[in-house]
Length: 154
Image 1 (cartoon, rainbow, N blue to C red):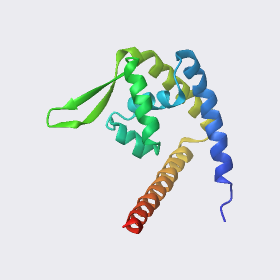
Image 2: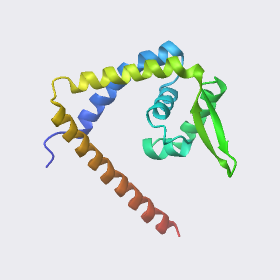
Image 3: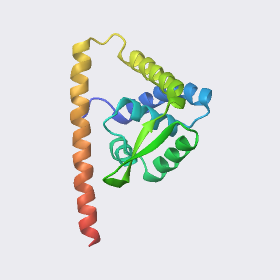
Image 4: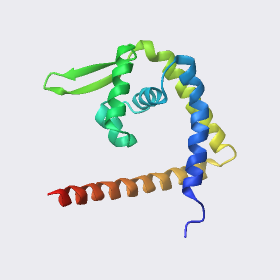
């Protein structure tokens, strides 16, 4: 038996995060998804495609595509293509998004400082390791489940 209700805590975490970043969205007139994409790109420079965002963040392909298009139209991101692979668009944050991204990162820092206040660093490090392990378990299950679903379709 799990000593805590993970879903209840997940909702509290999501509510706090929404409160922290919601102000940034209103200030800059962007959606939460658009801000999430900008921050994902800013925080994870080695993952720079829409596919990366969909797979790593477990977001819907259609929502990511629509938000990327809007961000591109506003001049916040641009697509780069490599000569040898014209199919894969690498997303690059433009200077026009600098203030949004900086504000978003500050909101993320505020969120983390609220959550981690009073917790010793060694406990935070242990929590990170546990969460990474939990996430890997979830991803493994979802990959296996996807394989089983596709095998059942054949």
